[in-house]
Image 1 (tube, rainbow, N blue to C red):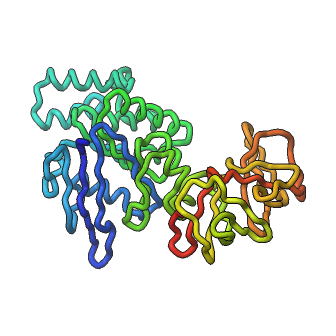
Image 2: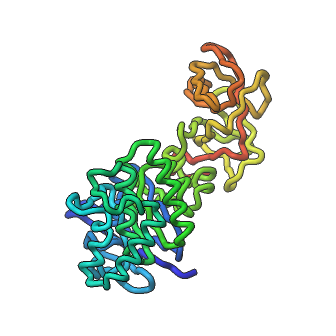
Image 3: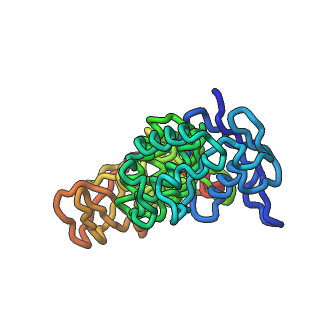
Length: 359
């Protein structure tokens, strides 16, 4: 596989503080990689190291087969889109798009061709003679993306480009960015703390915590088979339910309070007799039953039935543990209603309590 970007044993320290630790990441040609994690996890820092905006402490950065570890940002063959639009307010949209190309002394005919192509791709042709002050937030971000596209490079880096927009605009531009990647097939590395952006945009997601990649996989694997408790809890809204207990019967069952849950059908590694374990089940992988099913269900009591329109979110208490269940809207359940929760073990995750790794 040809790698468009390779980060090799990258370490970045700010004084005595280690921000990125022995980071390794290979991005294939034309791949859309999302760096996902909470604030302070190092995702934007890693992007800035790839862009050359930060000098790394150790390791290497390769782009398109060239070692660019100490190359200037302008010499790395990248286009970057920032969280802030950073447009020149006194210039028109056309001026903002063409400014960098003019500084590079590109022929006017080539500049006009590139600006026209980008305006067509981003559907901002009617805005070319306007100034940023006359544009909406979404239009400004399109111009900021266009300013990166006119460079006609193979690698694009996005640093939380939609975080300043309202929810509706974020949703619209998310679709536009995915459409853009499909059309151009360029390599894109995208930083966000928004899991919806990550799950919908990415070919692969790198979930980060404390300067370390916790899991690197396609969105479906990240969601259905999280590598550890952190990934499982960070991905999903509402979050995965975590049931503390222990494996019993030689790993064939899980003891949660007074309930025995059969683990037949679990997709994972070999389950041993362990002192403690945590069973993780997503809200949509639980069924509300009127009668108990031995080995498959646990008793619970409804606390809140939260109607969301297309479906409902049921907040319950099971064995003293709060849980959430996503169900179809089939009538409301009053607080205090006893129910039985059927768990889909084939879609569940089991974690070792000590290591927090998926079993």
